[in-house]
Image (cartoon, rainbow, N blue to C red; front, side):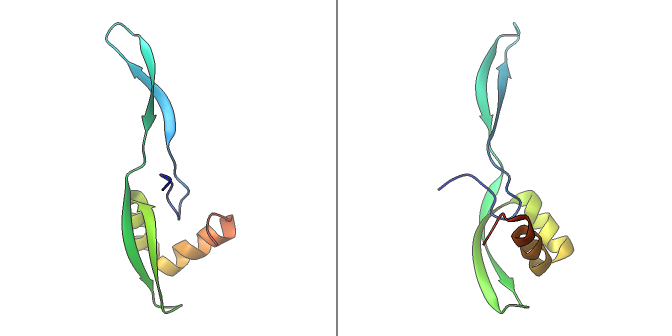
Length: 78
């Protein structure tokens, strides 16, 4: 499975390891993803999603329905 948040669209980004001698080698920064089951009472449906932990905070703030609606408008999810 890909390492992409299904609601926010966060994904792996690249950067550099920088040593003490300032030598640079490529590395990856992975998003902090968790697999969660979210119940949306407005639709009466459970969604099993792989989402970032920062998106979990947004869901608890705005609500699951609003976050899913925003992601649909942006074209991130179905």
